Amino acid sequence: MSGDPGSGRPPRFAHLADWLGWQQTLHPRAIDLGLERVAAVWARLGPVRPPWPVVTVGGTNGKGSCVALLEAIYGAAGYRTGVYTSPHLLRYNERIRIDGVEVDDAALCAAFARVDAARGDIALTYFEFGTLAALDLFARAAPDLVILEVGLGGRLDAVNLLDADVAIVTTIGRDHTAWLGEDPDAIALEKAGIFRADRPAIIGQRTAPAALRRRAEGLGAQVMQLGREFDGDTSEDSGSWSWRGPDGRRLALPTPALRGAFQRDNAAAAVMAVRCLAARLPVSNAAIRQGLARARLAGRFQVVPGGPTWILDVAHNAQAAAALAGNLAAWPRIGRRHAVLAVLADKEPAAIAAALRPFVDVWHLTATDDPRALPVADLAAAVAEATPGAEVRTYSDVRTALEGAAGVAAVDETVLVVGSFTTVEAALHHLGPTVDGAGTRAAGI
Image 1 (cartoon, rainbow, N blue to C red):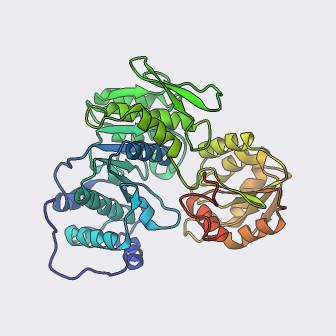
Image 2: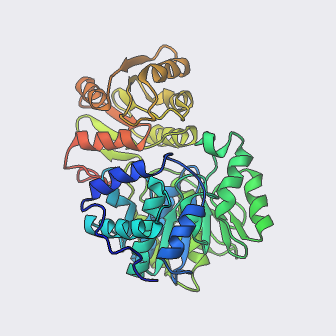
Image 3: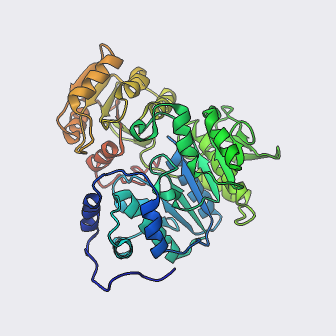
């Protein structure tokens, strides 16, 4: 570290909630993509070149799963990891983990104070402030590896401040089109911004837009794409699958603990990243197997058993909804399925509803208290268009929607909560302290 910059003044705030509330007002825009501000502050705050290897994970969907798999694998191998993800479900602290443990409020407040002192008069967004705090904490903790999840896009996202030793783009789909564009190739070019020359660029999607690979090759990156340089055997064997590396060698692996056949693609990309870093951080095959079996990620087809059964999923775009539909197709169906849905205004609710239509009997539509939330009337119109004739109920807020669905669902029925992190967060609060952001009531995910 270069030391603690500052003016000698006491910290601006003493409590985490006060820091977070203030950060949301510091910059005039909630999202302002670009690296100039974070680069300037990091130059005052951190080491010029961090000593730990960095894995950066981007993509439309699958980022969180890939990060969770990598964290579990390296943890099983005995390495200390620093992990930065977003958004969070229940606690801001979830975003920053060191050696598998969320940082506490005191550490976060101290990091925020250092960032505040270093920034001078530079206005940072909420995400930029958190990213710099995470990097500051990692620099002090000296982990063996840092894993960063892209917040939005890639090229101009704050985590792209650091050059990735290995970069992964999981999937490309339509999301955040106001910032990334409508065209898949244009979106791919933004995602490809995390790739670096002469370093591994892993593409975790067989059908990724061709522009993604072209850009990686044009940068001189070491391109490895699922279905080409590496792959995973997607046979329906219930207990195992086979990973194939660029040299043609195969590795028998257990089915990932994260639900869904598509998680094998995320796992294949994670294993490829582990192999790329093997010279610096050797990982045994046994640790890879243990990590895949131990990985956990709240809010991704998170099943809470009971009467009724609850299924929580943060799917908030068409691609994620299609993956959720695949999981629902394989899930035993007894009674009716109720869906509590709320989305942000920049999403495509008709596409989400169309993907889930075969698996939902009653729609419970609402809006979160997020200022970007889509109004219930607009959501109802979109769902009615995508699911003509479906039973639809509307509510003024998420709490009453959850209570309404729970009140009419029989003990042998299912309540699906979907559409955004804030919607799933509300469900976790509704279900009570026996269910948290790391798992479910005794059953796990």
